Amino acid sequence: MASVLLNELKRAVMAGEVDLDAHDIRARLVMINTTCDTENDAIVTISNYTTPDKSDASGYADQALGSKAVTKIDATDRSKFSSASVVFSGLGGNATRNYQGILLYKYVSGVDAGDLALAYIDFTTPIPKEATQVTVPCPTDGWFYLN
Image (cartoon, rainbow, N blue to C red):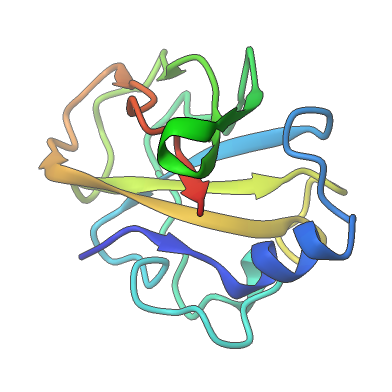
């Protein structure tokens, strides 16, 4: 398991097709059968994953990122993408598998074949499937950074 900054994100940012702090960027809570942590080549939309393994808990919904920011950090020669913590609340505590991470994507059409996959962020340890709320804090270095 590891976080993945998708090749499609790199291409889309360089082509000016993704504006991280202006576009609708969302997070999807994924369970332990996900292939989001191992697939990168030829992944453009969420539907390109073999197994996205989206949370199947009752009450689940993908969450829009709030307070998004792209920040240049001269001291480390980086630019980072960050946001407020992502909170998945109202979960029924009845998911079929533990949670492994989140998939960040650009919301385009609300269907997996239209929404652009950007990055997979791995949890350090899986979160139990019985959780009724999952709060994912943005790391100090942002969700991801470029240097």
